[in-house]
Image (cartoon, rainbow, N blue to C red):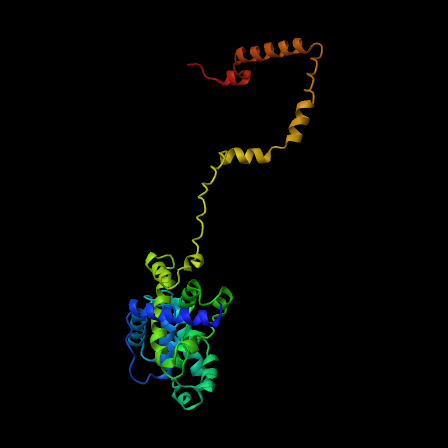
Length: 311
C-alpha cells in the first residue's frame, strides 16, 4: 500500500472511532513502573477491565515484591476478568522480576532523566515487556510519541487494509506516528485499542464487522474465516468378547497337538489269556465259600476237662 492511501485510511479510522468510542484523557504524571504493569494488564483487554484487574492486583497483595514471588497461577486467578489472564500474569511477574534483578528495587523513575531512546532500549530488555507494553509506557510515562499496538489492534488494521499480512505478523505499522500527530497520539491510541479489544474478543461479531466495513468497504475480503466444523464420527461398536475362562482355555490350547492327537490311533485292547475266565470263576466261588463257612468252636484240652469238678 502506498503511503498516501495508508495515511488516508488512518485518518478516516480516527474519525470513525471518535464517533464510536469514548475517550477519557489521562491526567497526571504516571510512574514508569506503574505504566508498564498496567500495560501488561491492558494488552488485548478493554480499558475498564484492565483498570479493574490492576486495582485488584494492588489491593490483593501487600506490595510489588509479594507479586513478584507469587506464582503465575495465583496472579492469573486474581486478574481472571481479563481475556487472557495467564499471559497478563506472566508479563506482570516477568517485569517485576527483571526490574528487581537489575536494580534491587522497584523504582524506574531515574530512566525519565535519560534520553528517550536510551530509556526505551532499557525497557525493551525487561522480561515480559512486549512491544505493546513498551510503547504504552513510552507514550504515557516518558512523553514520547509511540502508538501501542497489540494482537487485536493489528488484526483490525489488517482487515481495514492499513497493513498487509507480513506487517501484521511482524507487528509493524509503517508511517502511523507520522500520520497521527503527537498531540493526538494518546487519543488515537486509546480509541484504536478499544477497537482492537473488541476485535480480539469477537472477531466474528456482526457489530465489529459493520464498524470495519464503515471504514473500508473492501474489508470483507480480509475478514477472518471460521474454521470448518469437523464431522462427528461415532466410534465403531466393540466386538463381543468371550468370557475370561474361555479365553484362558483357548490360550492354553495348542492346535498342533490337537491335530496330532486326532491322527493317533486308539490303543488296541489286550486279548484275554486262556483259562482266565475259569480262574476268575473259581476265585469267586472260593471267596463266597469263605464268607459262608462257620467259625469252628474252640477245642478244650482233655486235662482241663479232668480237673473240672462235677456240679
